[in-house]
Length: 166
Image 1: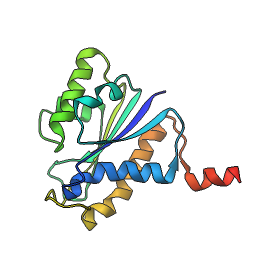
Image 2: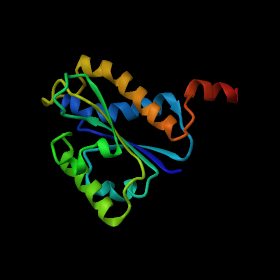
Image 3: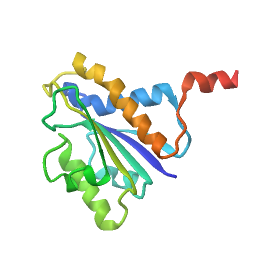
Image 4: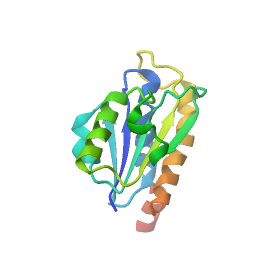
C-alpha cells in the first residue's frame, strides 16, 4: 500500500496555508506506518508528478473555494472531485489539475483520491491563519484520519507510540 497525504498551500496568503498546517498537525501528533508518506507540497505543481504517481490513495489537504461558508470542511472522493477541476475549486487549481491530468494521461493516476478542503476566510497577504480557519484544522484533520482508516491505516497518537517504547 502506497499512500500520500499531501498538504498544499501558500504560507504567505493567510488561510491559503491551511493544507500545509493540516499535514503539519498530522505529522506532529500521529505515528504513521512507513506506507504513508506525508508531504508539505507548498505551492508546487508539476514537480509533484512523480511523487503523486501510482499511489494507492492520494489524500490532498487544501484551501477550497466552493461557495460554502468560510471554515467549512469539504470532503470529496474520486469521481466527486470535479473532473480535472473544470470549475475553480482550489486556489492551486492550475498546478494540481495539471498534475492530475498528466497522471491520468500516463496511466499513473491514484487508485483512490480524496480531497479534504477548508473554505478560507481570507486570502489576503499575511502569515498566519485566521482564528476561524485555525479552529477548522481539527475537523479537517479528523477527515484525513478517516480517509487513512478507510485505507486500512492504524491511527496511533505519537504519545501512545512513545509510551510503548518506555
